[in-house]
Length: 426
Image 1 (tube, one colour):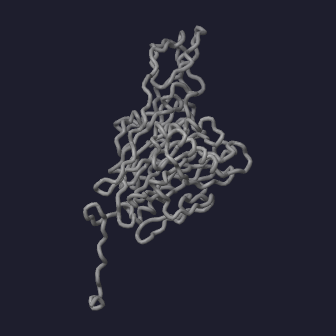
Image 2 (tube, one colour; image 1 turned 45 degrees about the vertical axis):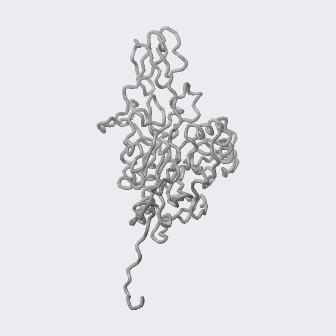
Image 3 (cartoon, helix red, strand yellow; image 1 turned 90 degrees about the vertical axis):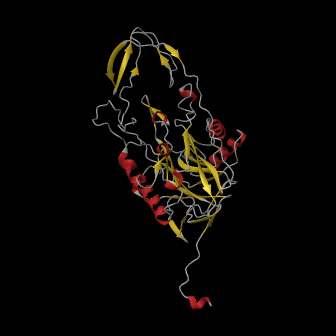
């Protein structure tokens, strides 16, 4: 989307085809590569415009800049009674204990993301990977990843996950991909941990005026038909060890855009595959968020993951309006840097973090282009870039999620109840 709000699907992108003189184009052309001017014949084939150069393209320069590790680190409690914790998000692309890219994913988390306190993961496979043997548990996958992060110099992690029904959530056949959380137990804990099952829906409960979960972690309405052959979101309620502040973390991986057509293809308008499913899924997630905010309008909520959709697709993100805001917009990331994925010659953003108003005032956030900037396609560890953020968590009475009406120095206080029967006090 351009700065003036006009949607730009990058129609100027064009494929450089085979040279007409029989020479060969460079094997490696990555994001940021500079080429000499190309002269050739423009043609159209297989849904794409392309130029057939008179001779092979010549590289002027390859990009030399590499992504830097995040500078966002956890910070201890300050004199206002607040600490800063970090969170991250990473689609780890069909990760299982046997995955060759597991050590590299571990390195990314430990080095480039700085071992976030809470980490949203997508595409975690079961313990046997793509072998379709009925296994659904992912404890060995998550254990291997946690061990790999430690070996890479990162933090010790616990995890939270709800295993799916076999072959019910889409993705690579037999792999049973699902969303999962890693979290640092010295920083946060699950509030009243009570792991749900694949078919059980967690409910928002009003506990003395504060929202809690009946299942923690738990799935959001997993039997709804909108989730057919797709990943069901998992929600956790975390509480910081130091400040007793609370954070609702909702991990999503919506239906893929499979079946979509290129912008110059025959269908006019282009087909956006499975958009109806994503609209329904967004409505389910937004409804759950509204239930949390109905109990505590100041609840801290992060919805993060692979939405498989662009923010300018209003129909998908309309259900979240008035509930949460996009983190890129909140921190005013340069629109040119709002991407986590590359497809059909375009940089795209399929991964998002949406935050409630209780967070947006303290939020820090950025994408780490460790895969889209890779020197070759083979060097990419995942097809998605990870992201990392940081937010304030403050001391409150009873861990009430930042809903503080009365403050005495760095402490949150609650008013005494009114007396209605004065004789009983004598």
